[in-house]
Amino acid sequence: MIEHRLIEEMLAVIAEEANRIKSGGKIDPLFIDVAVDFIRTYADRTHHGKEEDILFQELVRKPLGKDDSVTMAELIDEHRQAREKVKALVNAKERFEKGANEAAKEIISIMEWLTDFYPRHIRKEDKDFFPRTEAYLAREELQEMLRAFHDFDGKMIHEKYNNLVRRLQAHGS
Image 1 (cartoon, rainbow, N blue to C red):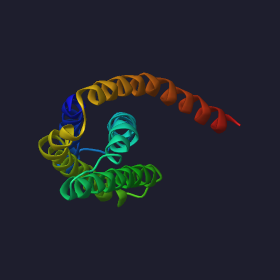
Image 2 (image 1 turned 60 degrees about the vertical axis):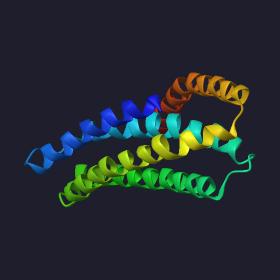
Image 3 (image 1 turned 30 degrees about the vertical axis):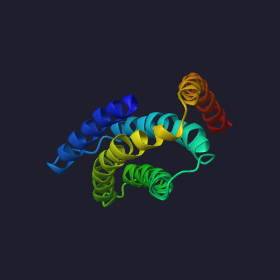
Image 4 (image 1 turned 45 degrees about the vertical axis):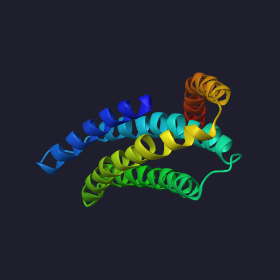
């Protein structure tokens, strides 16, 4: 849940940028690139990755109650929705950079969607799902999961920059 606090801070920055644009400011493609990188790398790949690859994988082996099973499926679907919106934001930004000024409205709309969506998603996890699902795990399982989260985080920086170099190599050829 600590990661949620940083995500919330970035969402506030995205909301400020969306409001600045709506008030007549120019779209800053570099800001969008940075926001997309944050969401893809930190919020999705790192944070959601730990949920999907570690926590949820452990929970599917447990006799979850119906409400918890439904909520977990909703969270997985919400992760998918967020990925689609971020992809749409990238596409809109690229169209805008090529002169499609109408993409500006789509950029603002997606930024607003993200800043509305994530707080609701985070509340669902923080207030409902995480506290309830801890009861399914023994203390030792929780400790092992924290170690797995730490190991997962340690691999992320290498994955990010390996992917960066591969993209640059492919672009150069």
